[in-house]
Image (cartoon, rainbow over all chains, first blue to last red; front, side, top):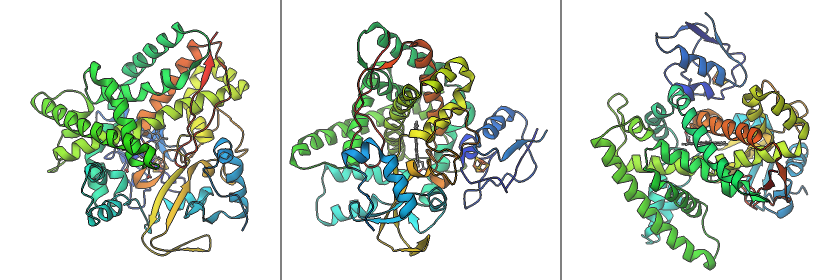
Length: 64
Length: 404
Ligand code: HEM
Ligand code: SF4
């Protein structure tokens, strides 16, 4: 599974990071540092989905 | 500038939104003599303030230091000492470390697994409520006991100890928000005694978990993160913070949501017809009338907001409840639209301090509101609620309803 953030859309709400700090790191200003395309470690798929769904502006996407 | 800017008068507490509208339109970064603080009311400015390093959360330590200097080493300085360690009143790097150590306990899967436990607690309270007839207070019977019971259960407290969590939560609020005059000095003293009991209770619970770790949140908080972990005193502080931050907020989130639905029967019908709407519905209810009106920040460096110079030593109030009704961010902001999406409200704050309990709070509010709506089909308001005259929270005295 791969996830990515659209940094044009991200507004630094930090809600993804509450679900999992390691899967959804933030930069110093609170914006998502997930990057455009990142691999989700095996076994973490459900958590990744929760984090993607937690974003209020839908900046995060499950890519595959 | 003669704009109404005292947010704690009875009329402003009853209808803060028209006060906010006037402030947003006429003076969005407003110095209020009544509050001795800047009121920031537009979404964009509130949002940027969460990122502005000139605004600090470190606001308990100065109070404690003043008290200690004046030689008043007392029970109050003991409790203030505990609160000084809370992540919510600390800046990086202290905050960063504590938040990281707490994060494991709030991970997505762990919270998602609490679904059944919360549903059971909600249903127990609703069973009792349904046995009653005539007008009853939904806050004292359901919305108030629920979050304290959830936190107690989460931390692994024995069922017979759960009622004490409510008392401690009230006592923490009393100490945190100060006393008003001599009439309350006595209550204050009793609160401090209660909180010493709380501290020793949490110490004992920690000892138990150390001997016998479980699946509970306290065991998760005790876990190592890299080479670091929370000390026993920090763990006690963390337990107290979770109770303090997670109780009254969630009570008001449930109560304000039910009131908003009762005042918008079309939206209540919509939710009854489409229960799957509960996710976005709760986001909209948090935006529309969330539990926190105002967050506080101390100014530690000179900064400018919308052309106003804000200076070190001053205080800033971030008016979340106003930002959430800003027409520049939300179309038709005063309309309740349970399907609103996207919904980037700031009821949980934003940035590094954004509510770490947000997933849990959402789940509690979703389950409680969904079960109330489903199990109380005849729900109706029995009397006009009164709002508490407090600055920080949006909180009713009672929510008296009938259910048949
Ligand atoms: C609907 C209910 C709730 C609302 C509206 C809410 C709102 C907030 C807000 C606005 C903040 C940011 C404070 C700031 O920036 O100064 C915050 C922080 C916090 N909340 Fe919540 N909260 C709720 C429920 C909970 C629950 C259930 C818990 C835990 C059991 C919790 C624990 C915390 C903690 C520990 C912080 C401090 C985080 C930090 O400083 O990094 N909250 N909350
Ligand atoms: S929740 Fe969305 S907006 Fe907030 S930081 Fe994560 S990606 Fe960005």
